[in-house]
Length: 167
Image 1 (cartoon, rainbow, N blue to C red):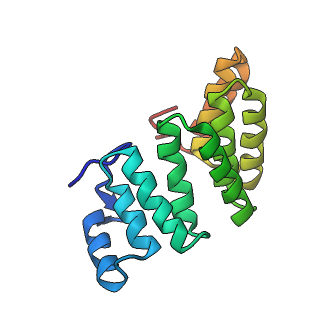
Image 2 (image 1 turned 90 degrees about the horizontal axis):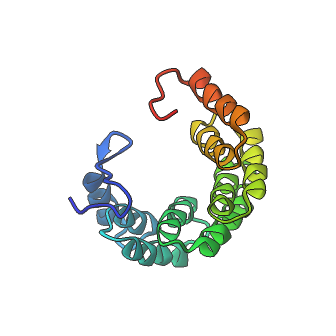
Image 3 (image 1 turned 120 degrees about the vertical axis):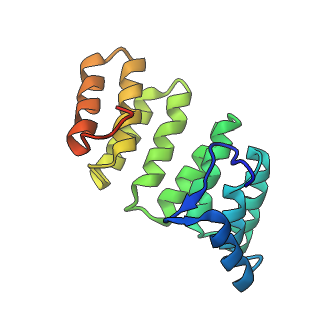
């Protein structure tokens, strides 16, 4: 299988990604879903962006493609584009934590860590048990030397899932 630009994705929803792609391409070869799955298997961040751009040209509301596109933008340090996608995610699904999490991740890469914390707080208001948001929020607290708050976030991660190995 081709390597993913960020990490290898072998299985999606318990089914090998190639099987998903084969089924989707049989039904709709140039659909946003097919382009999204191809992007998951892209060899580079740039290739993934091209495929996700095509998916979004066909369906500007394809939430999965929009969310996925934030990852290669971030990997390429194109934070303004990723932040813009976070804004679009938030506009598409205001009650979804993903847009706020993306809008938190991008300022965290830049000097505006307080803004990042505000977005993470909004994400946690929507989904208070979202492990990744607590974990990345802890990293921001650490970067601000706010150690008690960082430890509290990591403690919350382990309260939600005691088996979580990245806390």
